[in-house]
Image (cartoon, rainbow over all chains, first blue to last red):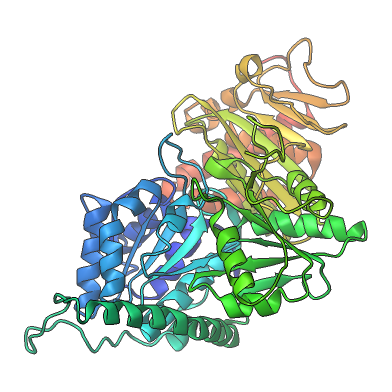
Length: 390
Length: 190
């Protein structure tokens, strides 16, 4: 049954149907509504779970680490400074190969302080060893968080579901929640063979020496690489249970015969699709590719999907200051490695909640077909004027 | 390109319930069988600060998550916003302006707009015991635009406010209808 729901409410309901036994969090805008809904469900007796209101995000991450280490399913959510405060623990969760699931309600990072959306928080944690899935809509957010548990528990890797703050978390739109019966069919109870148990003492997270640390890291890299197949599979199987498929590693939009392909993450793809339609209407061979899975970075699948492109336009909401757009850099690297000379136009925009409108995006895409590829341009930057080099 | 049938922008102040009004309207449109989207644009979350909220109503799935710059209607919950905010910015020709209070003597927007003043705070005080203008303004909007049905608005109010108790639900339904009446039969100045 479709319902008109706030995004935070929708994902909280989907999380609840995954039956997490421990939920720990610290409030931070724009994530707070998610946790408030879960706390209310527990207080109302609708969810059998232990809610821990932590004293910081560092503690919240530590609590879910501990909970999963004892073999219980757990959940947390955060954003922005909260995610950064978790950083040390997030590397630990990944290194310990614990199947933790969290939602990052994407928000800009201070300074200057901004409560609004971009992807700087989660993109800054791209090297933490977590799988990162970015969603376009609240329907996809609710469906993806269920897939996230399946992926995490299959791969023994943590998964971060990234949903845009405000643009999704605070938006009411129609969502069909997966039913409890569907979730139970799709997601078996957590079986974690390495769970800490006083009856069977063992160490989780012992030290490593120069003669074996590197092997731990190499195996973590391989596990993430291998997770790509599990992620694609989890999406297909979810579609078999619910009838809803948002793409595995990426979603292609009017891509087959496209000369210009726009690549982006998250909810901005909705406006990009409207821009693509407008430019198609003018007879331009434009398409789009929405990367759903940013970690692992699905290089081979991307190279194949983009083989027909004559130019790629990356629109991203994060920046490696001093280097440029993160997604553009990684895409160039994987294309170059595969021997492709396809130019990648790098655009950074939408930072700190700046709206990327259909008109703006249409102009950016249209201009790209007529100009050499910029390494990194800022969209709609007042200091330099629209489309000028920042 | 998929464009929404109707785009509505709410202007209010933090704490006045602009976000709730937008959410209620989107729920009502959804119940009427449309695709609908509602979301707020907060400044930083301060009581009393200007707040905007947006609603799209469409027959097609709504993909874009952008703010609304060229609304078909604006709903202004606090008339003092007319002094500080360009509340009618981008209003489409023939668009609707639903204002809590009396329309200003010199309407600031294009003459093409339909200005309607509704004594929504007074209705709120009568029906809810507090000068909350939301549901009266929604009733007026429904009356002049016919974009959503009163049945759907009633159902949205009933479901959305059920947790606040029957008295609040009934008061808001009463306010919906009084807002509607005020739009259909404008009375003497509030």
